[in-house]
Image (cartoon, rainbow, N blue to C red; front, top):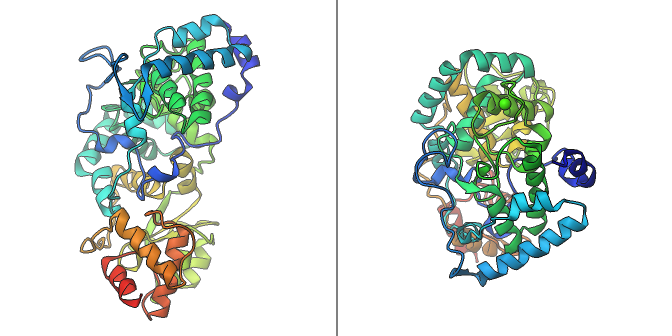
Length: 446
Ligand code: CA
């Protein structure tokens, strides 16, 4: 139906997505170490398109009795009716609206997940232990070998490293074994109804309706995460419209069931977001004594030659990639490993805007390519502070005149700057990394 009608009348939905494939985190749920929500998911589904075998979807669709945070099935139905009116007024046909919402279901579990406020964030090394586990490396090498011809063909065509494409596949869905069973329309409509992400959800719903109208996938097979990211490499509907391609030539863009489509679409996403085929993502380096850690948050950007001139050294005989604009990262402070990261690192951030995620993709891709993992040990002896300890630390810094803003339990640039100022005043290495010892020192100074 109405392909043309929808493209004309829904310009928002067909504009190229400028954001990553993941929804914006809301302030009170942003984890210190972000990443795909499926990392902690306990039960991977069978490989293949979900819904074709095993238990059917809709993990929680008790449409009559559930009341979560004051949200009910009746309220959901009213929201859907109002949304249909708004969409109809914008020219979406009844046929398209019926296809999407004729059998829409409230998913209360989506609201629970969206309101989750973890008390502990994970240390970067804990996150990487899972993200770049031995089994994920092994599994990825198996996939590269199984799809060798395809991976090489796509790498040549798009100029994107097959190891990085495979690493994203591993990060997003454990190579397709776990990409979420939520019906995307239901998940997005539930988020829209819940209200905290209504603008995001509505924009994605328009895009999802266009995907259905284009005939790439059926409503029942359009599945993914609770937050609306779909298929093996977790494209949001707007990202799908902007970047998904038909890799196997059957006329459909099927990121749920066709590995050639998944691999080509992911490569196209990276290519269109500036992938530079001539360079790696980055590499581990050694920082000189006395390094200014205000420069270890990814900016400023300098050429490799300029970093070399101030004492940054390669960690091994592979040397440092020659970047024209590279940042330095030291995610665990002065005690941990450091990395020089180039433009491709920033392209990976366009996929999922979390430094820990992009680092995991880069490190996993290195392992898949047969290169070593991180060489300098992580400071695993340091306990990760809980969110309430971080709030205490922030309040302490503020009381001592080193902080600004309301303590929120999340270590961002302002908190790191405050920690560095305190550390400098104490004559310590000012790396901005929060530890229990630092918190005790702050408390003792109050
Ligand atoms: Ca296809």
